[in-house]
Length: 264
Ligand SMILES: N[C@@H](CCC(=O)N[C@@H](CS)C(=O)NCC(=O)O)C(=O)O
Image (cartoon, rainbow, N blue to C red):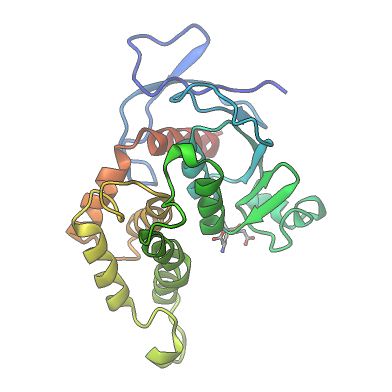
């Protein structure tokens, strides 16, 4: 199966023969901006390999992302790009119900993307996959190591995404007929969640300070997604944080590639 390769992150003066120029994301659905990049035309299914780092192989088992663009599996694609590790894509068309087909249900019985296969092991749930990748590839410095007390804070943010931010957003988007008591909701209430996150990202540059971690991939994805669909307030703290994240080459690459997939 022919693979595709990403162009290096730096814009080139001229596209290489056989490569097409794409205007990546000026007003795209993820709301981010990147400069013009030269990329090969997509082929499906596709194999991608980050070229920002050397094309080293970790010597570990193959990584395969079960992916649909755009979807929550884009969170994991960003994370994979941050690791710099090579990975394969297995593309699903959610609109055609691929996620409910027996082959895929054997991978993820939830019938959801993302799923990541590492060797023979399947990991699901976007935040868990991000946490796993950060530990599996420590050379990328996306995790806080065991023994460092800040690891607890890092975990807090990894869990805060799926357990507080996401349910707060979806409950607001789809209100219940009867509002449950605050004490019954794990996230408490929407405004408190927003205030807590705003305070956490205000100082920056990242949640853990100077170190960018997998927690930024999880929380940053949730905030960007929420703002994109106007499901959470466009607070100055969120906008500034999202802008800092959008300067990361890995996010620019992942987004541009997903744009190509979504357009295909
Ligand atoms: N809790 C899961 C949620 C995954 C999820 O809901 N994925 C959506 C795409 S954004 C999906 O697969 N939807 C297809 C469906 O439910 O049929 C995670 O965080 O990974």
